[in-house]
Image: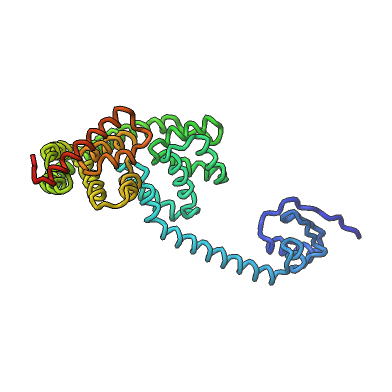
Length: 352
């Protein structure tokens, strides 16, 4: 007597349970079939190795061995990633601290440690830091979006990354809002973004005040150090200039010391180089490459050296070249004439 086969379209259970089900049907004289992972299995032809071969491409013992190896590799890879994440925590904290408001440092450290222990082991954190760095460097929104696109996020990971950016980057809410407007990411809750912006506004005011206070303190420190060096600078300069200009040199040193004395330092360095009698190119190298003068400071420093150094006019012509106007050249000619007279006074024993 022919018994028609009944088919079960979706079997819920393990492969072993499916095999056991079909074997019991076979022993009961029933003809059943079922679909398991898109593979049809039949009670009249069912066997353990046959079913495993059809579904996994391997017999059962091979599959168990391969699966065990895969599981061990997976556990080892996860352990390695966890260890690597733990080792990166100090670097992630430090890098983030460079780009966030000081008031958020404690919260940032908690975020880093939590992300290092989650499913991604800090991968989303690294992506967020990459975007935060672009923002920190004032990149265009298009460049930020290109960086984000290269990270190739899914919906969940994209939200995780941009949530970090929104909460910690100084311009995070603005960037998140722009990217959502461009359709790059899903929109964030506007009320949440506004709260972060208001918080950042307070932190920005604190940061500006702290910077201003540090700047004033640094200026006071530099001024105090410069004023303490005034006698030394005057004495050093007097050894390099004509006696007739010593009073003028004293006035210059005392005046520049009020603003930190940086120009006195540079002028003395250049005058000492010129006094050694070497090629003018050696002094120009100090002036351009070591001291790095340009624009206003270049013109001012040149004019001071020209005024006080015995080789000052020579240095000014070499340093400024084609930038010297007719009036500048006349002044240099006058300085050279004065220097010749002062040199003659030294030779005759005169001093003023």
